[in-house]
Length: 373
Image (cartoon, rainbow, N blue to C red; front, side, top):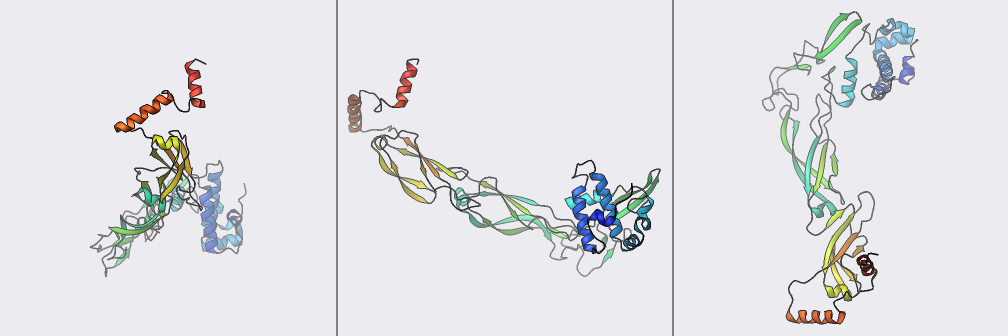
């Protein structure tokens, strides 16, 4: 099968700049990497993309390809990536580059720092109304003394002579199937590509130290249990000049003694007396932002719920608030004066010790149940 034009593989024309070639390669390598794309032809497409990039990213090979096509390149003889055989180190390197792996093929390449997670416990009302606050977290930061180099200030940092600054060593073995290249972290410099003769006395050559950093948070109104806040760039420092990771703040919310929350709605129970339930009344009910008046109609049964619209939790991504649901519970007194007992006995005699709403649907249903209907 004839090979496709390398520019066609990367979706470019011959006037593409080195930066455009690199950008197209990164996009396609991420799309077709076998560890990500499980399509049957993903591996072949990935190899095709990598081969095109290996040629077009090398100025001398690109010049020969532009003049003579595939016949003018090392890969035109049937090899892959200029080795005349199979290079089994390629997949791991590309995956590490895009997905934060260990950098098996190029351990000296810039890598993003690790993300951090911090659990923050909020008071109930702080989660409802939001709050600005500062937290302190332990994290690795660039050493102030050596500015992340790992070397004692004023001393020299040498390029590793074993790997010539690449941080990797190649071992080539001839096999019946071709030449196999095995890339390993340089044993002389540990993959850094540099030799530090005099290590920094503060960080001992690590380039980073553990410190407690104060971070300002703006907790939005309406957050709930388990919500996460992402603080960009406040994770661990990156390796080899890579960007820092991010900080994820996981929120926990304390329970309230009176209010219960379900989404953006608030629930509570309010006790009322028997006379208030029977005769009706206007009572005061606490809400998240103060007291309000609630009319209890005559004949209210225990367990009846009333809705206070707009007295719940603010919505996170739109204006407005949820509702507050008030459940009234008729309170039965446990201690009464003789006069109170006398009045209740009189009421019971007048009523015949029957429920006042004898003809209510509830009691009709109960009587039919007793009769077996």
